[in-house]
Image 1 (cartoon, one colour):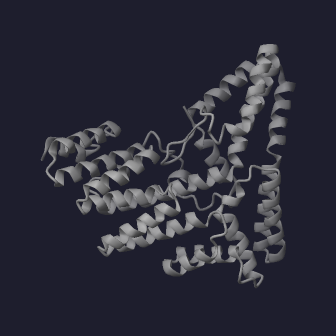
Image 2 (spheres, helix red, strand yellow):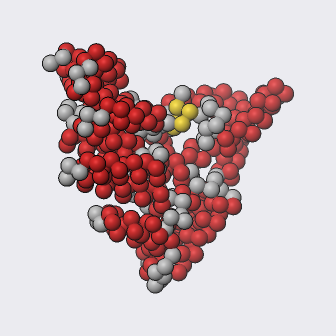
Image 3 (cartoon, helix red, strand yellow):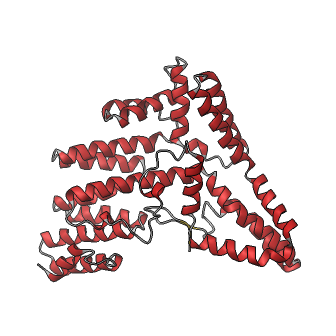
Amino acid sequence: MHWVKFPLSGGINSFKINSPILLPWGLLLLLAVVLIIIRGGWFLFILLVIVFSFPLHIHWDYRFARDIVSEVRQKQGIKQFAENYIYEPNISWEYSPTLVSSPILSSDVSDVWDNPLSRVVLTMESLGIGFWIALTGTIIVSRRLGTRRILIALLLSLILSLPGILTASFLTLGRNAFLAGNYSKSVNMYKRAMSINQSLGNRTLRGLGTYYSWLGESQFHMGIKDSPPVYFFLGVNLEDKGFFIKSKEMYQKALSLPPTKKALARTVVREALDDFKGKEFGSAMERLEEAFKLDNNQIEALFYATYISSVLKDQKSTLYYSSLLFDRCREKLLLSDLYNIIGDTYQRVENLPEARVMYRESVSKFDRVKNGNYHAWVGIAGW
């Protein structure tokens, strides 16, 4: 059961012991189990604290929000690519059982860091059915604790989230100071936010590219030209304007920052797409390989590499890249397109039995809408 839904990778299984969501609460859960044996009331109280704390923990987890934003943008890129180059792509359909349908998660994620309401909506809509069942059941069962204990549990949950609240507050103060033109104060506020997150919080702020972009922007306006955050800020802006070579130069100077490799991989993927459009397939494949080495969760790079390998009739590479993608992706629409691509690859080498097997796998992933997955049915029919 997935409590947290991701647009492409499907989610985090909260019942696996190695889950990053479960680990912070593992000891508390163990204590709760011991207490239910001794005294059930205390178990319910601690369980209530855990359930109240879960959405707050997710909300202040910058790694979670970063990954959500990354996957949303990768999905948008794949969808646009598929609409331009793939015949009847299923990824063009708006609905998918594993895709969060929030306007924020399906389209605009640009204001997630600036708009607190966007973060709240993102958090609430990313929590899967498992969490809401647990929350509802726990509150119903915990009614016998009384209103006072329920309020105390809520207060304890907020106390546990205090480092996250302080981190976000200092980030907001830093951003407001920057907009007011007080750049030195802005830098101080950003650094305080990082200090709190590293010493008291969940230590996820270090992986957030937006933090270093904001910090670099403030330092740049202070006249500081030679610092990793400034180079990161310049790299982001050059990337947004399409100056990929210059952007890569800036990112190379900021490699000491944790999020730089992911940003660099994103830029390399954009370069690979330009190569593909110019029919420079060899160069495109080399860049996609480079992007995947920089970020092994670059689903977008793996999808493009699979498709280009299919176009080149390279069956071995098609199967290799698709296998890596199968290991990382749970989005059913994308998987259905992937099976269609593999089916087309087999069909090009006239291996029709294997092609039909792949087309049937595609149908098993997606065939819920009238006239949906037309390409797979055509392949099965052998037209």
